[in-house]
Length: 252
Image (cartoon, rainbow, N blue to C red; front, top):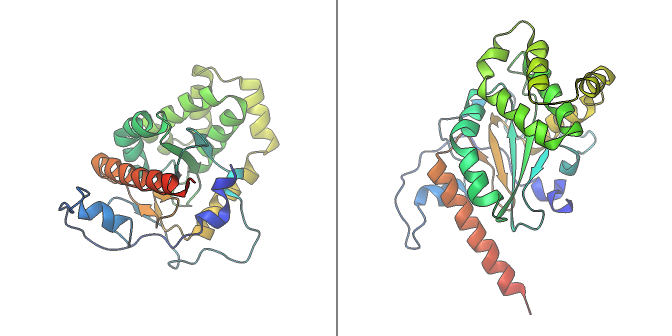
């Protein structure tokens, strides 16, 4: 996982404002996709976070991205993507409900893209901490069970966000998806998940993330917001083609 080093991720601040016409370039790639990969974009579909733009690195300990998040796909994939989302963010849910399954099937499971999902706490949603802790404790126990619980958290976001006892709600779901509750409870009680969650939030600050969801395609500026599925497909296809050409050109 060294390819996910912090140095590789510290590309530029989060995206803030622009509007793009979606016309085709000579190579068939839309102007929108190329613009999104080259300058700030305002897709109108992100939850903005307070704070100064680019005010990320506060001089504290740097966080290695390999220490946080959930890896999906082949570590040998030519394209690396880091997603930073808050479970309480409605636009993050929109991405996971509308786009992620297709991207996973077409790009991650085919070995084209390695995807790191980094859930972190923006501070905007009161109940996010409880479900993020639960998701982390599920992940350290069983990746498959985590995936089932993760899906449930996105599917029923309204249920836990509106609950006065979100930890109880998500614990019931953990039981339903086959997580060992004794180990799950022990993890939560030990607070062993807290450093990882704090590290993810620190990494977001270091990257200057100002909206959720934010996607970092390694080698390009971050993409902010729940972009349309077709736009994401086009971006990943283009980036993969460029990475493949570069890899072939580097061979003796």
